[in-house]
Length: 308
Image (cartoon, rainbow, N blue to C red; front, side, top):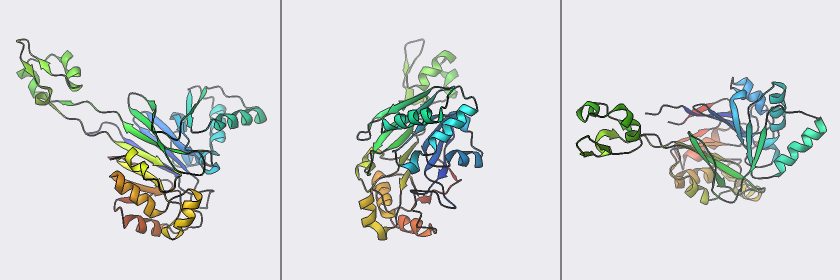
């Protein structure tokens, strides 16, 4: 099975501004030793501390767009890193070069000094492209439809190795040095020249897991094709269905919009959030979404979701 935990911690699930119970958008993705912050609304670092999450381990930050409820917590977090004498590099991805301009203005006004390197990466919000990869994960952009340049992010686990069936090691006199190549898919050539097909001495790896973050966007069917078969989809649901027209006008989605995308994408599970401050009771959101896509959960501040 899977060796590495793949989790998403909800730091904020509210739209536009904080409420008494919900913070603006922010999530922490953890995969093995890779820690990434996805959006950073006001108060995000307090949420990280409140829920006992390690801020120092974050090496990458992915900002969906430059509306305040998605990035206004960034500068305080960067300042806190400086005060904590952080030395490790930090990479920040955004669909707008203005984020770096904002950072430079903040630095000039506050006369802040950062003892660590911050690298800003500008991504194209209008295309699906690989923007980051390491030995563990690949990250792709997901074009969204909003009132400002905006993109989602698809995090996909690298294909795991095949499982070598140890019982064949003695039968075919397989040396330990050959096993890594066999796990990668190579056939085994015996000393007498006999070729043993890889499928005969290994089992296939479990499917790669994936997580898609889609906020903010109005109903946009092309999202489904970009995230086909995703394990966990986070899709914004700012409004209930009764405000469909308002959602379209403001570049947001309803519960039905999100559920339709999840169904079209053949997602394993749907996670909905970015709730309008006008709503205190979230039960109707879950009820409407599950009418179309049964495996739906609410993104509640403080909850952690594990991708199986």
